[in-house]
Image 1: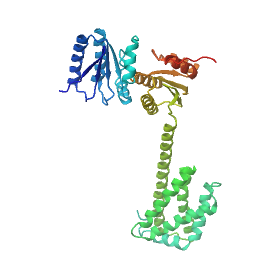
Image 2: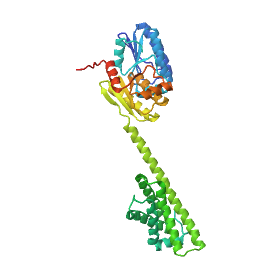
Image 3: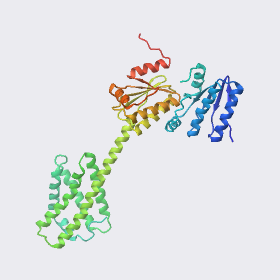
Image 4: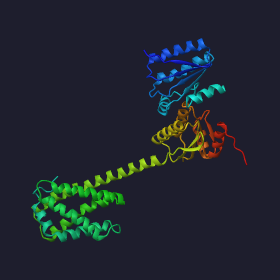
Length: 120
Length: 278
């Protein structure tokens, strides 16, 4: 099974998803990420989904789950680079990702975390 | 399709021998229905062409002329549909031939049972041709409507850049699912292409907002939010505000402004641009 790499930049963890997401991969990512946040005492998590073209409700829920999980561990989550088609799909699935912050691209996502703005 | 197929020899002979008489009568009958929109000479030209094809179709075995006849009729019907003739007017142009033929039969004193049997069969064939013009007419009009709907869809959904990082979507006309889908896709794509973080959706030109339209707007805003952009809805007229409240639609935490100017000012402020007099 492929694993999604988790990179550390300063006190931010960067998860760049470049592969087709299987349910198993997603579950593994959640476990790995929780472990790494504790291990590195990261304050922010950026999930880059620029390369993700297909989502289903399971993956949509993954974003929300990761966001709540990281918040428990005192880290902010930002999802960046969502494609229009993916956004439309998630809306049609009824997933508005209430607690997840989003940004157009990685750069803006980093800026958002740096500014330390509160959750919406 | 072949006309008559040898069962209407008398009528075929009559059509060949009294060409001018039948044609005159036919033109006169049709001219009554299309008065003022086409000249007698033009109409005569069209009908003479059809007439020749009818005569040929009745005398042939293989159906070539009949094919040409139906092609010519479809062409005539298409032209008329685009010129704004009604389908009955086009069909009457064809049915007029029956009257003309009947008139000639009576004038020639043909009263035998055989003649009338032939005429009944001839009449049925002409009815089929008339129906063909009807069908073609309907198809042509549907095509015209489909074309117009498509053009409307292309025309009505521009996404304009208002400022660096701010795009605007002036919506004009009734929003339905298909249009909203196009608007949503082009807006989101523009957000990605231009890297804009703010979008203003202006609904000044939307005549009515019902629950469905509101639902579409909300979906667009949420989708933009998922991508990391903020939407402001502007141009809500007083009556529409009342309707929205009366319908119990909740816009939640979506920012709404009365005018496009207010929305632009808000978006500028959010993106850190300072606007002042002088």
